[in-house]
Amino acid sequence: MVNYCPECGGEMTYISLTKKYCCKSCGLYCTGQELNDEHDKRQNFDDEDAKAARRKEYLKWYLSKK
Ligand SMILES: [Zn+2]
Image 1 (spheres, rainbow, N blue to C red):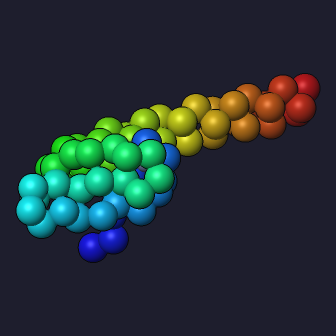
Image 2 (cartoon, helix red, strand yellow; image 1 turned 60 degrees about the vertical axis):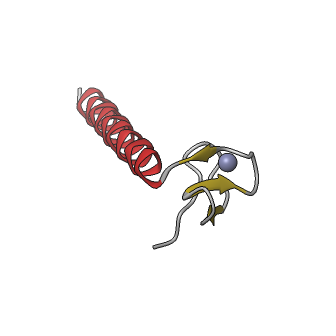
């Protein structure tokens, strides 16, 4: 499983001593569980964005028919 930072997309390094992940790019520091939660949240957010974009596309198509 490759972990990447939910904040900046950078590579996450696992620190076995503390059992936490640290971002090489921005220094975000969190547990694996927190990392998963963050990614889940962003996934849902992306879905909403995609839905909104599709609605906009449909509206454009609908208006162009008139
Ligand atoms: Zn980061």
